Amino acid sequence: MKIKTNPPQSPFFKGGGLAHMGFFVFEIFVSFRRQICYTVFEKMTPDTAEPNRLDHSFNSVRDRVEKALQRSHRTSKSLEIVAVSKNATIPQMIQAWNAGFFQFGESRVQQASLKKIEFQKQLSAPEKDRWHMIGHLQSNKVSLAVNLFDLVQSVDSVRLATLLNAEGERRARPVSCLVEVKISEEPAKSGIPWGTLGSFFQQTASLSFLRIEGLMGLAPWFEDPEKTRPYFARLRNLFEKHRPHFLLGRPILSMGMSRDFHVAIEEGSTMIRVGSALFK
Figure 1 (cartoon, rainbow, N blue to C red):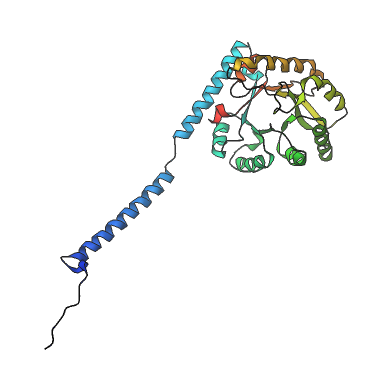
Figure 2: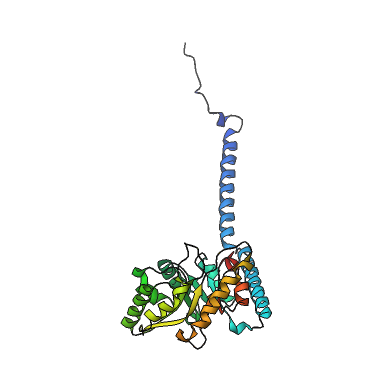
C-alpha cells in the first residue's frame, strides 16, 4: 500500500504568501527609488546658506574698514584689501570677486598655481585680478612664483632678493616686491630684522630688476588687538624713513590682518591682508 505524501511547501505559498512577498519586494523598490530621487534633488538644490554667510562677512569687513578710515580721516582710495585665499575654495573666491575683492593672497606656490588656473577659467575679465605671494618663498620656487604673482610681499633676505632680481633679468621684466620686516621678537616670524633694514637696502641697491614697492610686516598675536599698535607704529616709522628706496609713486605699507587691521589702518597701513574675517 502506497502512501501519498505531498512535498513540503514554502510558507510563502500558504495563505497568500506569494502575494505578500511580491508586495514586500515592491515596497523595497519604491523606497530605493524615492531615496535616489531625494539624493539627486539635494545635489541640484543650491545651498543658499554659504553665499549668505559670506556676504555677511564681506559687509562686516567693509564696515570695520570704513569706520577705521573715518577715525583716521582717510578715504577708501587710500587703502587696498588683499583677500587671503589660501584656505578658501574656488566658489568662495568667485563670490569674493563678485563682491568686489580683486586681489588674492596665497602662501604656497604650487597650490596657488592650481587655484589661479581654475579661478581664471570662471572669470569673464581675468585681467583684473592680482595675486600676492604672502608666505615664505623658497629659493627653488622663485621662477614659478615670478610667473604666478603680481607682487611678492615676503622678501626676507638679501639672497632671496638676489634670486628674484636674476629671474627678473632673465625675463627682462622687473619683479615687484615688498620687503618683509621682522618687527617683533617672536622666533617663528621671518623677515629682515628691523634694526638692519638700512643695511639690506645698501646691499640690494644694485639689483636693477628688483622693484621694491614698500614694506610688509606682521605684528605679534594678542588677545587685545590694541596691543599691536606699537609694532605697527614702528613699521610705519621705518616706512617713512626708507621711502626714497621705494620705486612706486604711492609706496605700499602692507600691515594688518583679520584680527587687527583696524589698528593697522589707524597707524597708516595702505594695504591689509584679510583671510578668516572674509571667508569664516
